[in-house]
Every structure is written in structure tokens, then in C-alpha cells.
Length: 397
Image (cartoon, rainbow, N blue to C red; front, side, top):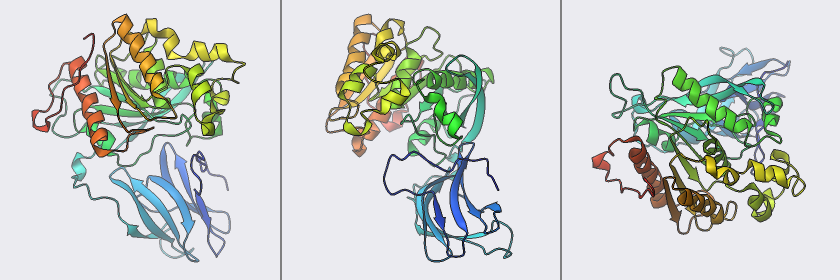
């Protein structure tokens, strides 16, 4: 029996597994469909039955004894925890019945369920690398909490771009996402062409098209939500880190960008410089995303946001760790210097002791608060006074 779902995931880390074989011959595996995971059992006779669990984002799956599995899994209202799942034997109870025992509970964040924004899957019409029509996917988190838009006012939108770029949006409780939705922003986490979870053909749409397909999908997702009247088209921002930072810059370095603000977290401004300078593990990664290096150097130059800096007019905040070896600080400094020279509003924060992805709690909080302060300057809203957020300096604004 076939299943219309994705089972494999990118092999960024060693030791992962999306399936386990039980002693009775059944196979328990994690599948992804429309951006949401579920645990599924393949019976000995070939039937495939989805298990009744609350999980929407599943990490590694391992056999535990003859008839159970252990998995790392979470949901839109709970961070990942470690859970033991026992699929009911065939004929015992309702199809898909399973016992779930939590071995290591997720953190208790003290959040009320009604204040947690739960994502909904959305689709939108976009274009492929040749300009033909295709469908894109995303998870949309509506704003919730005390800072929802007043009556008659549409909320601002934050377009979030996952890293990788071979990765995916994850429908699991993220305090980083809830930071924005609890402050009145709608958030759309885009699974652009090239993301995993939608089959090989969808994933391979990014081959040789990084900076084209991903950008088209981010623009299309934002415009779709604006056209539907769910967000304010005059207050749409885009943010991303690493590969997502490259897509952010590429989406802003164009005359038709719908975004009025952007946040680049240790992103790539110059693809050729990255091909020359990045670390060994990803040293040939760009060959499949852009073209063989150095034979395709002209494509690297043309695709780089730094090449099209004259098209920038959107205010940008750049956040960078000074010890980043994957996307070195010179990538951020090149785009910041170019925008300064052109008089484009720009803010730049360099974090001491941080590498590729911030790890110090104080710096994580400062980065989020600085980004919010930046949007408050650009969009013209007041910061919550009770939070004591330090303002950020925006040059040329």
C-alpha cells in the first residue's frame, strides 16, 4: 500500500531515524503531509494506519522493547519531549489506538492554551524557475493575545524563512514565533520550493534555483495573505537566518518587493564569497543550489543580493555573531556598508562570542527585542513600556 506523504528528512545530523521495526513485523514510522507530522504503523498485511497521538512534529523514532517505540515529538502547544508510544495490537480497540507515555516532558512555560497561536496550513499560487505556475505551502500563525490589532485595523505580517535551505517549517511550539504573535504580528513560515515534507519533486525545485524559487514563494505567500485581507499590505516584513538570511536579502533586492522592512540574521550577501570561504561540511553544497563552482561564477555573482544593492530601498536590520565560521561576519558587513553608502535605513548588531545561531540567553532576547524595536521605528508603533525594551539605532532613518 502506498502513502501520499514524505518520510525522509535532510541528513544534517548523524544518528537520526524516522522508522522502527517491531518484533511482530510491524513498522512504525513518522510521515509528513502538508507540513504536519504523524506517527503511522504499517501492519504486516501492508495496511497503513495513522496512530492517534497529539504529535505534529516528530524527530527520531526508535524501537523500545518488542512492541513500542520511543520518539522525540512535539505539537503546536508543546515543545518537543521524549515519549513512549505503544501501538495497539491489530483488532484491539479502534484502528490507530495507541498508548502514549511521556518519559521526558517538555518545559512548562506557563502559557495559557488560548494565548498560543496554532498554525494553519495554507497554499498559494507561485512560479517555478522558468516562470510557470506552481503551488507553494506555508504555515500561518494568526496574532493572539493582548496586542491584537484594534477593530478595523489589519495586523502586520512577518514572513519567516527557515534555514537550510534544505529544511522545513516545523509545526511545534516555538517561543520565538509566539514572541511575535503575542505582540500583534501575523507570522507565515514559508515552505518554499526546495523544502522537505512535500516529496522529492517539490524538494528538487530548488536545484540551481536558489534565490529564485524561494524568493518567489515568500513574495507570493505575503501577497496571498494581504489579498485575503488577513494582514496589512503596508506593514509586511521578512526575516531569516543563514540561508533564510540570503532569501531575505534577495527578496528585498528587487524593485517589486512587497516588504517594507527586513531582518537578516547572519545571512549570505555574496554567494561567490561564501563558496570560497565557508566550512568544509558545506563546501560543495552550493553546486546543486546555484551551479558548479567556479565554472558558474557568473551565476553566483548575478544571484547575489550584493550585486543588486542599487535596488534596495527597504529598511534592514542585520544581526551577526562575531565567531560565525559558516557565514562569516564579512557577509553582514558587506551589505551593511553598501546600504550605508546608499543612504538606506540600516541597523547592525554584532554579538560577541556568538557563532552560527545565537546560544546565549541574553543575546537571544536582545536580538528579538532589537528586531521588535526596529519594526516599531519603521512601522510607527509604540513599544510595550512594561517590557523595558532598549531602542535600536537605525542609521539613515
